[in-house]
Length: 367
Image 1 (cartoon, one colour):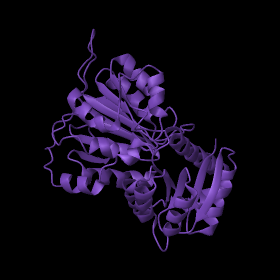
Image 2: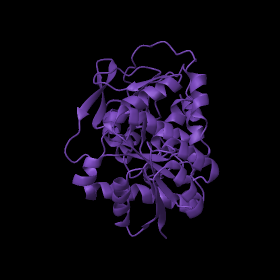
Image 3: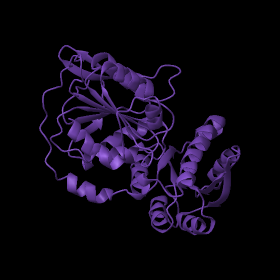
């Protein structure tokens, strides 16, 4: 079984490079290419690819419009390529709202200097997205069941925000039973931006706990992502800075390209931002954050692993579980990639396996 791919980009150079990298993987077949969104729609209808790689800025019809049209006519998993700029980040999130399932940074220097590494990442991402679609014989629920981001934004930006409360205090473990959760920690990767949007924008403005979020994402994207989520949500959301206090109703997003840890000094909890150490593949890394939490709040954390490739978060979740914390995972049906949640489930760590649309409701009920 092979994954059939349509490559869409107005740059002939980029189309050739992407095609060459995909052809290295025997499991992947490039069935066509297109130079603009309108041509992409036509070829999608004719070729019915399993995955589409899509540029954002193109003549005739841009990538975001093309994604929206394709998802309405012949829903297909779409991987966006985006520039490493603030504007590129905003456009990428617009494309995800339109129906794309994931994105990769468009970096021409890396295509030339780190070709093998980039090819490995690209093929892995395309294969994972495509084989899931083939296995289910339909686009994932996180694509099909997506609500209108525009509607959510207009409704929530007018919502009254809760006032800033006192910083949360570290709580001791409770012997003989579970302690009440005092912190929510969330980890995600592939498909995570849409999943996080679904979870965080459905929490009430009066949400009583602090939240820390780790999403695998480039450093140039996390600030824009945090601001976008903040505009759409009733709770407060921002990119974490070194020394930020954990506060009820505030979600802190780990900066891309760095690591975020949590520690307790006196009666308060803070996040600290560090440069990544040699050998750390994920920047930021869920395991790094979860492990730090297990040392200072071992029994008082609700840790949730959302959609993503690999197993990042499993070992940190294991330490939290051993300390008495609660671990949940997103279910397979609503995950774009059932890698990270599956690692949690197969390790016997998940107390609940939940569909994406139920997670925010369950969080509120839990706390």
